Length: 72
Image (cartoon, rainbow, N blue to C red; front, side):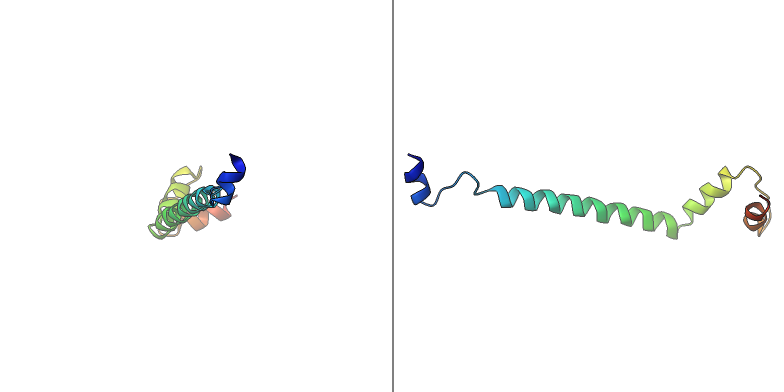
């Protein structure tokens, strides 16, 4: 029966490449979406705002973050 299936063009591994392609595509799409989210956070200044709020010696001035960085 196995010989007959293979001679007709059927194989047990016929869909393996399609499944691998789908998995790799999903992984790459997740990476691109993640990088886009990081880009958006950086461009909005969200990371800097969080860093300033978390700074233990945050100075409330225009260049306060510079003073805070160099005060250590």
